Image (cartoon, rainbow, N blue to C red):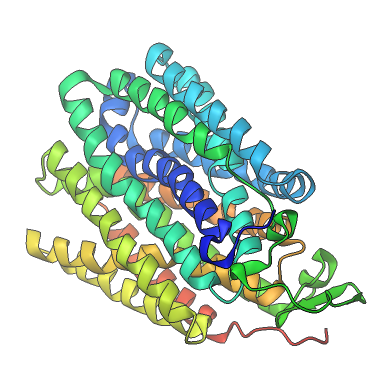
Length: 416
């Protein structure tokens, strides 16, 4: 029995995905920087070595992304989410219980927590949202990205408080148990496509016949569904790769080292964790407002403007001499970080739904090396120069180039 338009099941699925992605982002993206100093101190590791360990988590996505994308398109998102999040939860528990060497750190965090969230935390949820929403894609993905930011708002300060009071090991164990108890019930709600329940995207009423699929493309509600073979021959795909990859290089380096950077500038550990939470909080507004605006204006232009403001924020951080300037950076940069969902909306808008997960996998495979290099580069700069200044000014240049790439990334025509 199909759901009525008033109770469109896609919104319920969006809530479930928001919980899953919120926990994944809160632990992997935002809380990782809070774990940085206590774990490196306990294991006797410098910042470059720690950065390598955490960056391996991104580097593994280079190999995993196309494989995960293939299985999402073949099996649907539900099973990858359950498998991946179970692995991540168990990995966090083992990370807290047994990590007393660099090798065990790699085995538990990099090859369990990170692999688990790479499999189940993000890609299958974004693929499902792309399937369920068309006209409202920007808003839906904006809410998804806002949930990731909200995970940082809630979990980064909480993990910082737990680490300060009971230690990083107990904090990791608690995080792992919470992930299993909260996320897995929501994962059971997941459905692949609205057609599986007799629905259309956005809850639109069923009318007429489905359009034909010809020449490797299908057009549904104005969306062209390219094949993977077609996509890799389109210049816009590689320009989007460049724009995303450069931005992720800077973003991964900044976010991972942000708590250590703040503590180097005189912030306490708890205060640094709270500031990371504020950075994430601003991402909620960026995700929701950015998604809303992108449903009304050309997404490439919206992203170019947002990345330009992030560039200016980084320049301010480089010149900052007082705490209020750091907080201005946090407000602007955090807001821009929430707009990451527009990348996924652009991908769906430009290339369609039929092979979305596989296409995202190829894109991730291309951008992951830059995202993995960001924290290593930043840690190496600190270990060599004793501060992060060279890294920050490098990110200013990188973000400026990314803004230009977004601006020139035009939607491909129907004929390729």
